[in-house]
Image (tube, rainbow, N blue to C red; front, side, top):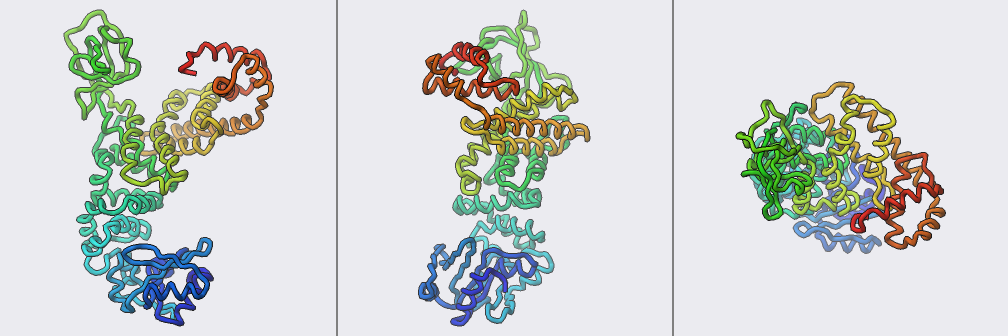
Length: 528
């Protein structure tokens, strides 16, 4: 008999009183030789009688669910769910989702009851709805997502009528609670064959309805370094991450901003003007950093004109010119394809998508988990941008060590402790992105691994160094300078970072502290 001793004992005692069957996943998985943690059962007694019997035996039953009230028992990590039914297995089977889940095993005899030929479907690797498929999805549209999960996890072909009904009922997922949808999507995203799951969700039209920011990546051509469009690349990045919900979700969203920022290389010339806190050049709105110094100057801009917002030019380089030439705008011949600042746009879109779900239910850390995903998305280019020269083959051990320490510190330090796991998450996403359909050689990958190992060494160094710092001498020095409370804390953080960047420096070095203090007092108060 499958199940823990706790589950077996309850079922055996109940079977002496009335017909009771194990049903669904526990029976299905037993046929496949897979252990099942939780056990579901149906019993031909009404709900109240089942509860009363269990209470008399000294158990504490819980009633869960509204449509089908479930009696749930818990002991440690063991769980047993029991639902009352009429005693007619054929009618009970028709309220279940798929035939492979409409398998019953008599608790007393161990005999399998199979009213809808679920065993045959299981043998033939077929996923089929119980009875009329459209009725099953009408009863609970969440079954559309369960269809994807079961088909991928158990490597099943979806029966034609069942598939078409699922396609028809995708819009009805809008009436399912966000909590239930999120939990099911979370299970899908950590599947081993997640790429197949994403393909099925796409074919169902799920993304078009609920995450159109992903759907519009299909067919979006990338630059010459990529062999796949933005959607195919995204799928490969998700597939290349370990089955952890945080990394999978960050991978799914990491390139959302590419549609918004897709551009073609161009030159634009004219006089920069400011209107309503925005910057313009001729008919174009300009986006870029530090534009204020260029106001009212005649300039040439080298940047990218957005594909989907052609009135916007993203500034890459800007320089003053003596006079405005005849050609105010021109494309760069065989110019590059740009996605400038796409990671920041991806992070913005990620924040917009979060409220459509309840990801804090499935992410480690709850709401802080959402912030971690947002951070990963917004910084997924940090490694490539920081180590661009090294990825191209430049080798300077001293520079790499310095960059690695700075990278590890800026990513891992949260203001109180150093979190090496956060660094490792970003490294995992960076590697997955690097492998996601880009043109590269074995040497490219070797260089990436070398850099990432340097960063891991830096994490170890920072972790050990942070634990051994003695702040006694520093505290006396800070008091001499009259630093207290917030100023004391900000100065301490400044010194801490300096120490992490250079292993040769020590905290009891007064010359070092004097230099740091001089730099500290020169920082404007609002920037300290």
